[in-house]
Length: 376
Image (cartoon, rainbow, N blue to C red; front, side):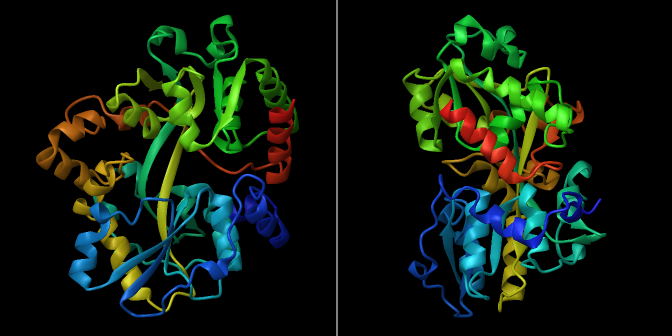
């Protein structure tokens, strides 16, 4: 299905999406970023940390180039930056998969040749990832992913207590349920808790059910947190349960001695997915293609999985094989061993739904509900 058409949004809606998080993620004036049109500079729009030398030093050396990153926090801020930027300002964008149809509809993306990328190296489930293809054409290549469920303090809750999202309404969780202040993962998990198997594709009645379920949690809430605040709230036990986050946070905390873990409850979890695309207006199409090829190569994937400040799951089976050969302890830690239970097992249980933008309601409707929930 062409995801860019399923919501029935107008171009005005897409532009509004770029400003939807404006209250929580202000975008600095674009003029503050003086991009380079040098053929030796690749301009990269991405989440923080993705131009870490650990990831890109080999690419820069091999091609005698500099990767220059403009960082954003949140897909809506990324959209706003692209709408503000003069054409040609960026060459490559890393974005969450749920924003691909907005980028495609806004005519930002260059169509990709699947034969240019090592998709045959990927696990079969990810070789034709549905949110990256439109009318049979490829516009983005998956780089990494992870699962969002229920993260918890292991000294307060036993694993059997957190097998259902219902624990968030328990007396034990009173004033201890924290929320990542991003409506999609938080509301998506509450939607699963309400029994919606397709948590973002809701009828009017299902949306009302999710709304009521969400508002009933307000008395349990400890607060609404940025990423940095999530780390501190878990560390100081201000929050002992947080829905809508995953091992991308709890793994690092656990390595620092904080007693936390993440579980996919019986009602299911969400998959976040990051991917790379070439901007149609980029004057460096060939260099951009080579950068995506590097990132999705076995070596690039192994580095992506093990970046010190943000470890991730990767879709490349060849990357898994290299990781198990060269960094077996990391492969075990990340549950990406080939001959042991691993993260693909959870995907295959059909408990994981893709994180997406709402299908039948507007972004504004979901954001308004989130705002109402926070202010209740």
